[in-house]
Image (cartoon, rainbow, N blue to C red; front, top):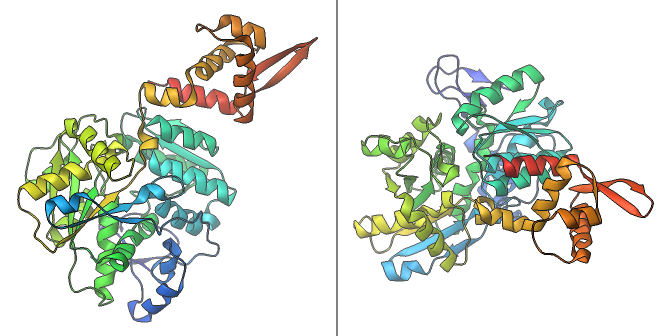
Length: 443
């Protein structure tokens, strides 16, 4: 099943990303045995296409895939059809749930000690959810700068969070080492090709929905655009499409190693507020470049100052996207202005992650409540009772309101009763509350 396109070596349960000869491995299937008519009789979702997915003993699913496909209003102004593939509607809010369901389902027999992933946020949140569903522990290696909405998800699902390095590039090798040392099953796509099989189902759904002429994809590590390319290439193998749609990789000007390679420009690898695209040395760059060139597509670089515009334009379509996904809108406008599209084209924008994941600065602090955050900080110092907490708060607040906050924090599992002394009830942080506070306070 796992073959090297260069030397022909085959692999089974051991799944390195590269053959011993150095070539990237691929997962191939017996396409002559695939009966596409069966797909239409099944429920929508990733496992609808099980003939083109690795065989598993047990499917671990949260009903991922089968995400909404929406005709965008902006197409009327541009003069051609524009559609949005809304991956924010997956269980944890991103396309990485497609990766997680396949990786966790396939990896269960090898994950006695748990799973691990190196991620800038979305894959970590997905693994945390699916590992919890499978009853296994999840270890997530994330960079120091990561969207706190994603951190909140990881904590809620009980993942063990390891902060390492400035960008996800540095996390990948570290996760591989930790996996070997601790007997963990590594689902990082750069270390294990299995999860890409789940991501490619985006292509199958797009074919069933509209059979697009162009697909615009936010690109960080390169794994998603390569996965989509692999999916369309398999549809071509099955004689279901006559040609591949043109794939368009979108990056930001501050961090653009893949787009710069495609366009022949000097690359930049600086920090961007679109943290999901902050990958300085993408391991899957070669695959992403291949996907664009073999499909006769192109790349677009958008400015950091265009991210808010992209977010607002998608919001006008009814979709709240994180900055790393919002790049598709300014990319669409740039290509349209250059006359890249023609009347009759069917252009798809892949929106990969929810804006609820990407709020930063004071916005995500407000989402858990400023007063609650202050209470967590106080309890991090020592155990305290209600009146003591009220007297220590820096903001004017009714005494009774403190107990309402305490009840809500207790319901969230962030604080608990430490002990009682007479009528006084003393509270302390739970381990979950301490982890949440540490990650929210991290620089």
